[in-house]
Length: 310
Image (cartoon, rainbow, N blue to C red; front, side):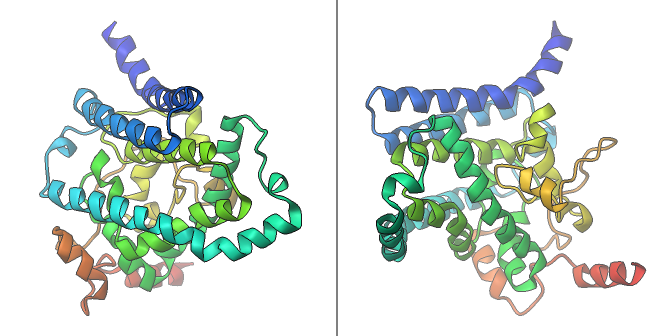
């Protein structure tokens, strides 16, 4: 029985958590509850559930030990995920209102988005569109040195656990959100689809960064799951410049950045520079520091040597 649990638990944890969250959101919306408030409530319950599962079936016991990071990550949640994201929700419609009205007048609001599709089909379409833009923004954050200085904040943890899914520099968060927001304002995506996307995005992000023993199986070739994302946080640059997908891994497969070795697990994660600031204010200042606090030591040298070898 114990062996069966050890096999089935890692395989079932993602579909069960995600299935429960999406089902709850669909049920509450059908019952007439506010879609946005329901999404927030389900995301919070999902956070608590994932935090508990980390303790029951951890990927690495050492990652369940605090590394002076909980207060920092909590501050990232409040500032970046709540204050910045919620404030921008008021700004985005104003920025794109003119173009959205023009598109609506030209094509008709009912023709821009497939409102009659089942909500789960609309969700997958929304994921495909958002992920294409997000893939290239994320990839640029790794390949453009100036952008990396901000993105290094997200790669600075020395362990992965659910809470550091929120660790982003606020300035980076602004342009990371554009592919997830602009297309759907312009297309007039309905509130119900936006709400179910919010639930999927929240639960997936928490699970993706969690310290849970997960086996994604066939889902690893559709979604950017925990097993794949750990490689993206590897200290080895040839491994971390892979698996850029936020929710889907499909675009990594299309553009050749899918990475899932079968013979080993990820080794050390984080930055080569182990002196990167751990405090929230230190991480806010790091991108503007005159010293190389962001890119791992030897990064440019490594790239130069790799190019010479080629």
